[in-house]
Structure formats: structure tokens, C-alpha cells
Image 1 (tube, rainbow, N blue to C red):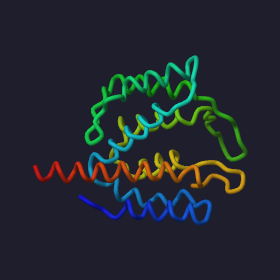
Image 2: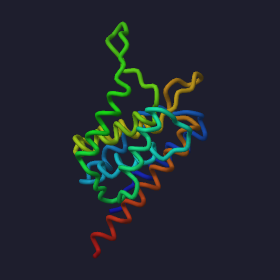
Image 3: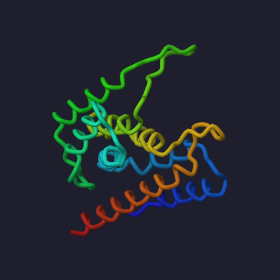
Image 4: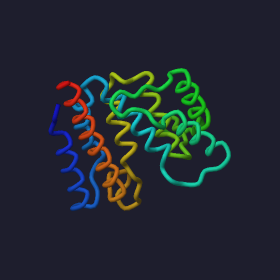
Length: 185
């Protein structure tokens, strides 16, 4: 079923190109798209898979975690991902434990994330396993995937986010096309 949400994301990308940066809350339009059953599960695995497959040298425990994630997620269907819940839960626990350092701040505590890609995998698995019925979790994952810290703009969607937004748009078009095929057969 075709929606207008991808076009709204194209508008966000155009604004990034024109203005240099936009607020990540503009991605809240995704919540409506995630209301359709199974879309959020697919998106969560898509983001985890993208994060696990990005180029970059990782060694030690970090490298092992990326390798485990890639093995778990490779070959996973985009429309209805089927990932072993037991294996995914074990990997999620390892990912969370690996980056489970907290720092006290004036207003509370903050979790220290040293590897953003591992955090995205962890969050994707968390949503897939336990929160695939909460559209706001999809928005948060998309914002974490796309936003980029730049001292000039702060935490925002900027030039680094442009490509990631287009990746999400391609994912959405693919899912909508596959849904259309599924309903016509």
C-alpha cells in the first residue's frame, strides 16, 4: 500500500541540502508508517543489518560482536524477517553488556556509547524482539540512525544524514512494493 511518507522524507532531505541541517524530530512522520503491522520489525532488522555490514576495521570484542551480528542477520528477508529469537536475545544481551557504562550528570545518569553502530544493532534487535508494536520506537531508531553530531549545528540531521534518509526511503518503497505484490497474489 503506497503512502506519502517517503515523499515527506524527500522533503526533509531537500531541506538538509538547502539549509545545511534540520531537527531530527522531523522524522516523526515515520510513526504513521510504522503503524502497519510488520513494518517496524522489518525496519528494525534493516537498520541492524545496515549497521552490522558497514565498512570499518574492528578488532577484539567489537569485531566479534559485529561478526556475530552479521552472521545472525545476513540473508534475512526484508519483508518478514525471521531471526532466531534465542540467538537474537543472547546477542542483544552481549551488545548491551559491552556498552553498559554510565556516567552521573547533574540531571541524572547517561549511558556512554562508544560504538554507535553496535548501539544501532542493539536497538534494532531490542525493537524486533520486544517492541515491534510501538511506532515511536521506529522513529527513535531512525533518528539515531540518521542524526549526526556537528559542533556547528549540534545533534541534527545534516549532510551526513542525507544518504541515510535516502536509504530509508528506498527501504520504504521496497516494503510498500512487496506489500502490494503480496496482496495481489
